[in-house]
Length: 321
Image (cartoon, rainbow, N blue to C red):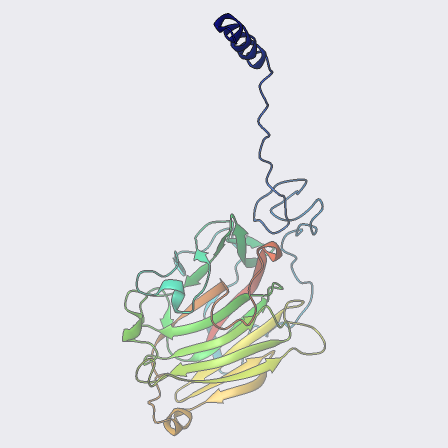
């Protein structure tokens, strides 16, 4: 081929390709699912609405349930919170914040949530304290409050009127810890200082709660607990109506009750059988927590099932005259 012809073909080839329209880049479109923890597609909330399950309509306050008496013979109301305000009474309560790290990561139970003081996790409605566990962007959040250094006491009758969450994978705990117990050094007074679980509830079973005492000289070699399950009454699940969860705590004795029905008790003889001292004749403080996951629930939480709501009408502490 002559050089002139070769150059002509080369020129025409360059011209042809240069005149071709540029290919448009195809935009990346993420696959929309009902479990990606993102509000997308035609969803009206995070993983709900549109083609997904309907979004929660918010917390629904029970319209019925057990009501404790406002007084007891030979007892005086010593401390209470009726939760009739619009914000947490910080003269009575503290918030626990974060995930317990560095000394108690996962709050000692492999829990998944971060505890916050946000009014999205703790707020008030119709005279009730609401603790809401949420999932946003694959992060669980909730609230945990306590009376450490604000209300520490020994003995009395405690009544807590509450309704439980419905979501599987959550863990409600209404309990007491020794006044010396701290998050910064949890092993110093747990389990040796004692723990009194007035009530624990797992969202996987709406008809069962637990009452438990933890004790023992050290963890894990001498950690012991005595726990009893109690079933819901009259066909009304713990997440449908109010129940009143109580203990009657006296010297050398604790009794657990639901709607004034006793179902569990512990004395020094109980701990002595296991060769352990009885730590419950000391001052304790209160904790309310709604956790996600952990080593007690038997089911894994599903983000699209949230939010979950713990509803507490009141707590009342009575002491003998």
